[in-house]
Length: 160
Image (cartoon, rainbow, N blue to C red; front, side, top):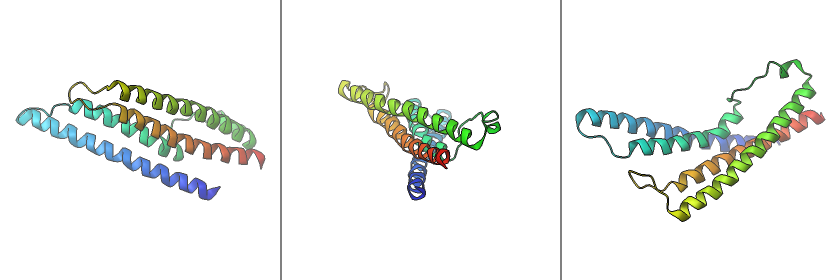
């Protein structure tokens, strides 16, 4: 299981690099747009592009955040419990999170299909929106894989 978890971690790190790239592009676009506003005319559609890149940054960073335990957790009560009870709480949390993000992933795929079929595009630059919704689904699927690995580890701690 350790090897599978390490592969999942590497997978999450790769997704996080995509998120990092999106943030760098957002920063460069915003900076260039501000400079262009001072010198000449702004870049059309930057607001839309930055928003869509923000979607990519958040969705592709979720799995890595879960691997690194970078999310907000209120543990002051759970730490007072026994190790086995802590593992039960962690397993329940992992399971509920897995179910939630599975449904978000599924609905994102459905919604992206609807957007693709309807031909929905952004207002200014007419960029299709559905690839970014598929990106949300991919990010949620990656998070589901991480949560499944964490659930298995929590169950192992309960059994031991």
